[in-house]
Length: 166
Image 1 (cartoon, helix red, strand yellow):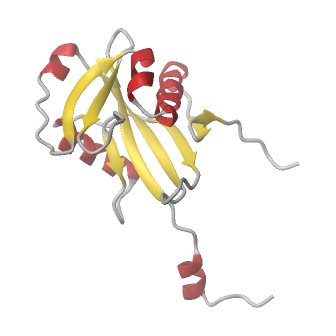
Image 2 (image 1 turned 45 degrees about the vertical axis):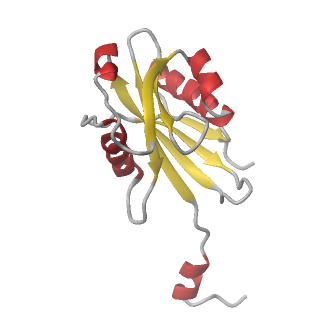
Image 3 (image 1 turned 90 degrees about the horizontal axis):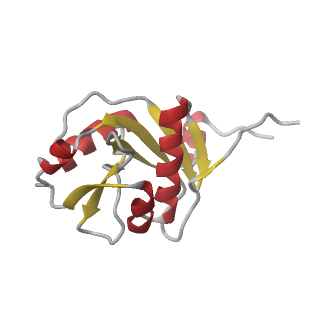
C-alpha cells in the first residue's frame, strides 16, 4: 500500500460542521430559548463554529451577539454527533453550561441581533413543542448532565454509551 504525501493526506481528511450552544436555566428548571427570524424552530443561544474558532469561543461569541450576556462559560455538558441530513454534512454539536438565569435578567434582554425575534424561559415539556426533536433530546440530556456532573455523548440527540472494541 502506497502512502499519500502528507499534504494530499491532510487535504483528503473529512471535514465536519460544528456548532456550539449554551444552556441557561432558571431555579425552577425552565430553559432559555431564542426565537429565530430565519426558521420556525426555536433554539438555545449558540451557532455555527467559524473557521479557526474553538467551540467554546463560539459559545461565548454567540451568547454575546444574540442575547448580550457576558458571563464566564460553564463546563461542557454534551457532545452530539449529527449524521448527514440532506444538504447538511455530518457534524458535531457542543452544549456548554450557562448556569442559572433569572426572569428579571431574561426580561431585560432586548434582542438587537437580526437573527433573534424574542427570548423566553420554557419548561422542558414546552420547549419540546418549540424546538426540533433532536434539540429537545439534547436539552433533556444536558439537563441531566447538569444534575449528575457528567458529560453526555449523543448521536442525533440520543444518548450513547461508548464501549471498547471486543
